[in-house]
Image 1 (spheres, each protein chain N blue to C red):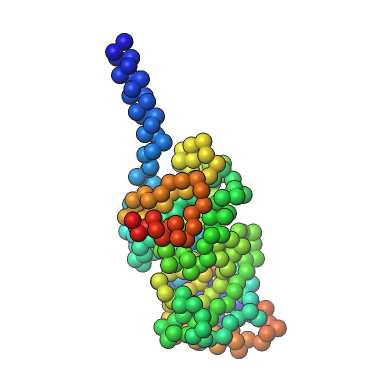
Image 2 (tube, each protein chain N blue to C red):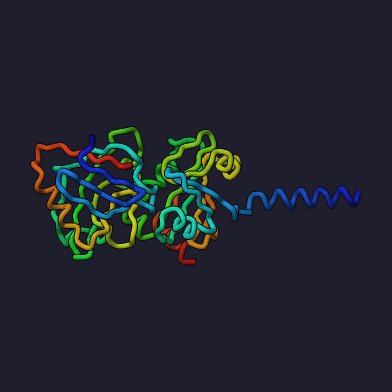
Length: 127
Length: 148
């Protein structure tokens, strides 16, 4: 069972062990929403929560972050057409396949990731 | 004799048109089972996802997944580019149905490809065809085509 889940139909990103859930979306741009399946979360590659990140990755406070995710199944997604990840949904509403958190302030998600020990592996199921 | 000439002229006309007329009715799907018409993408998307999105559409057709121009075209953009251009990518193959992302069915892909191995069709948000070619379009190409 994955640590996090993202349900495309309801737009809910949930992390039960961290006691959090966030509104989010994936797509419609580029190749569309993320394919369903389990992804590994790049826990050790999380950026800072910062204003020094592209507008497409910023929340309503002007800060943002990027957490890469890697499909655990066969797909060309992520190898062509841009990296896959989780980030605030800034700029134009919608993403090009990433999971875009639509909360005004997405810092609580960044906090939850950052507070997870670096040696803990995390997975997310997209469904 | 006269009717033969008229018939030949008609055949020539239809043949010429078949190379220049772009499809105005184009239906495609996504991996969630939603169906979209190129001329009513906004309404179709809202009906399926209860969200309003205005989007331009780039349809990429090829005879194989490994087609060089197909992969070069997809690699031409990063995720920010797609968002800046409000662009979605629809893929279609004439040899198999691949239901990932946005996709066109196999038969329609074959018809649109005709005798080409790769073809790209760019539609604006109103579903009007802005380009139909067999080369790779850059970000600037697409931005310029959508402005006109």
